[in-house]
Image (cartoon, rainbow, N blue to C red; front, side, top):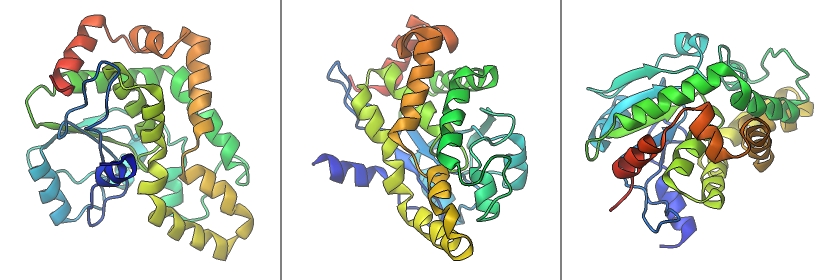
Length: 267
């Protein structure tokens, strides 16, 4: 199977779920691969249909890690599959990504220049690395990953759009397992394919109301390699390397890394 076909198959076909993706199948530098039916990343769960919930239950979802702020949760609580445990780990105290405000109103009321979405997102990614609350949330995420030791039990982690807070969670998770950075970057950018229809419809509405904001809203609702580069630069500034950041700033020990590899990698 070629890479493009495999990436298409990663995107789960739900009735009302956006950007739901399987993280299994990625190869590590040691020649192992990430197990299927162990980790999913996604956008919000608030609009899922009953059929979607049945699908996720049958898929094995046992833990739902929610990276959203409390105000986002209050506006649109998650719908969970039967038997799934819910864990709230807010990366920010408020939604700095603005994704929830854009979902509420196509032209959102935001506290920065609405024509400057791109630069705002660069700042968001820097904050995700530097803020104590973000580090605490991602440390908590690793705790949930470590607790997911039964075969075919799935941890699902998400935010509102499933691209920034979730994207960095996937970076930390995959890197810890030994997936090479070019592959991790590919997974990160897959959001633009997985959310293509949703974003296109949103931008069409923006165009009708205020064409001058199309590029800015697009910057807020898609991912960009430069966003990840800013995070990488902040990591290097604070810790020297991604490896050091995960071990020191997120406090993931060598023993825990070994446990994660046992849980999530093929023999």
